[in-house]
Image 1: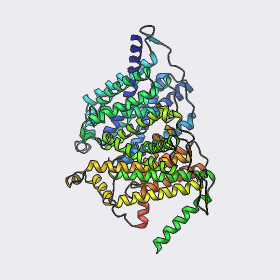
Image 2 (image 1 turned 60 degrees about the vertical axis):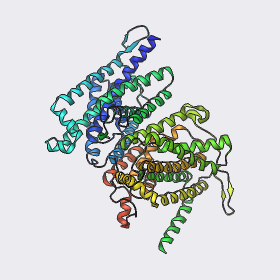
Image 3 (image 1 turned 135 degrees about the horizontal axis):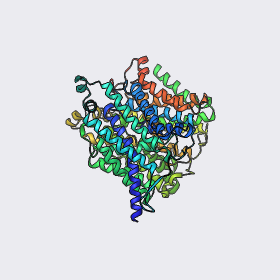
Image 4 (image 1 turned 90 degrees about the vertical axis):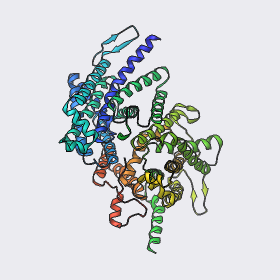
Length: 289
Length: 326
């Protein structure tokens, strides 16, 4: 029993890692652009397909493929910023619809390029860290955990300690005042989109060998990310991370001991309860709504 | 009376329409008719300024209720359709208690979560909802003869006339509601909620009312769908269809009553008829997505703005220069 609990705990840490990477990206984009990026799950998918194309099909070394995937998806983010979100700045629902259109395009491209079947990628490493006979952590999962910890710490340092980070937060809080202080809103928007999309891309790229990659995989990812950012409070990076961990724990344990559908119901119910008790999420404030 | 003539001509065209179409296009026409009611009911909800992502699940509540009523209790189909709408409205009233604590983006996602919970309950509980496979063998509308025309409701053309009549009545009711003092209050709740509250309007009650009415009509559209297709499952009411409803409304424009309907008709015809005819099955979502993006970029006020340009007439009561609200 103790083994099972420990193993489930490890699984939860892995789940929390990739969920938080996706969710933090989504929060960053919402914070700076003021738009809900419905295509965020498809950015995750694009990262995974970058690894399919480069690592599985072209035999590029795995980490090089992940790095290229990160850059590629970051550039997709820049494209979205320039083509969709900048022209629709005054029209948040329009931005939402445009991101839905972009989602359809990305999905169709994935189907056309790779077919609708699920892709299984050759494992990167078979190594397993065995704590006991039954408590084991595959190294491929460890990569995801390490990436989440390193990247999110770096992001935190960037946002809180550097001038760029200050500028980014300032333009998220009050774009007009920030512009008057000489901060380029376009520049900060580009940075936020690149980082936000890139985080989703690297999460997809690193988990690609661990899941079955298919054109519709973004769907469950975006649903999870929405739950997480709502529970954490829209616009709060810390909230997104805390909520990712909480959600991953609950979801993984309910899945292990009951079943996946019930875990989804419990997760969604928890989110509704949080919203009923505190309608702006755990870490959110009313004026960010 | 040119106006009378225009309406008569439009009615005649709608009646003649299925006879110029292929069988599969007739089927699309039935779904389109049902979706027109769905998107028109959605507009009533958006009048109060809230954008729900649970509307399609509410449609499913109507479908499941009506299907189960006929299957388990043997209720006469047209009655069960009405009851489906009533049950959907009641569920909406229940949902309004948690949901109307939220606004804007939080409401959007909260309504999505509430809808997903209902949908997953259908999936999880095989009794009575049939689990992931859903409910099969739903009783169809009983055939009847109107003397001059034999209605066989397995025929899409027959069902189109039936659904068309039901939808026309529902649209007329929705139109009357929107133009009534209640409908004007919905506008007030959206644009001047503080002022409305100060002048004694119970904002929460009006939001709930709009939510319940919109859900009731969505439920009827779901019941229309269930008794036509004969089988429903949780995936028929998932976020994909909801995304379509949302885009129909926004691409069509939500400042007028006809805007969302226009969006629904135009986008469905483009997607299901034009793109399907071109035979680009895999490219279809790509082109559809591109059309959505282009229409949002270049027609920020929706397709209805084109119509307004030509008719130079502003719908009375509609708020001018309506910008989609956060």
